[in-house]
Image 1 (cartoon, rainbow, N blue to C red):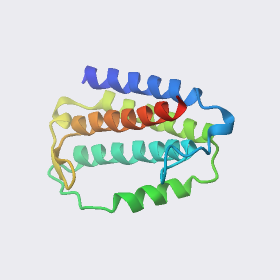
Image 2 (image 1 turned 30 degrees about the vertical axis):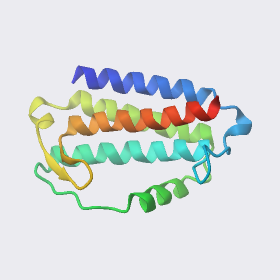
Image 3 (image 1 turned 180 degrees about the vertical axis):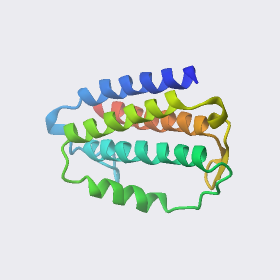
Image 4 (image 1 turned 45 degrees about the vertical axis):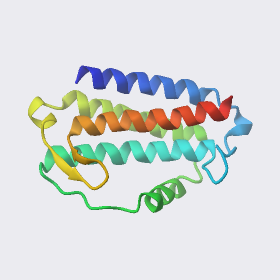
Length: 151
């Protein structure tokens, strides 16, 4: 568990370093063709942090749960749209708050809870800890996308 907690903190710090490098005039710059803007990417990360932590909480509270498939593209689009009027700074604070709650969730996780499993349509058998590593990997992937756009 300590490894996951360290990776969540390192991941947070790396994303913070990338987001603080975004010039104010670039927040609405698309990350690529048919892609989100930098501000929308941070909106996505805030909603994804919450939703992935919620999945881990369900695994803890309902061992053996069978998650149903969802249209991820539609869900992501809707979640980003809900945040369309927020500034990059406000979205960053939202993400930081979500990450703090994620870290707190994993700090309080007991060994018994960490061993709970559930079935996810995309990820197969999951545990709360495996979802924690997915959170790190998801954030890292988008952080690298952001860093590439800032080069």
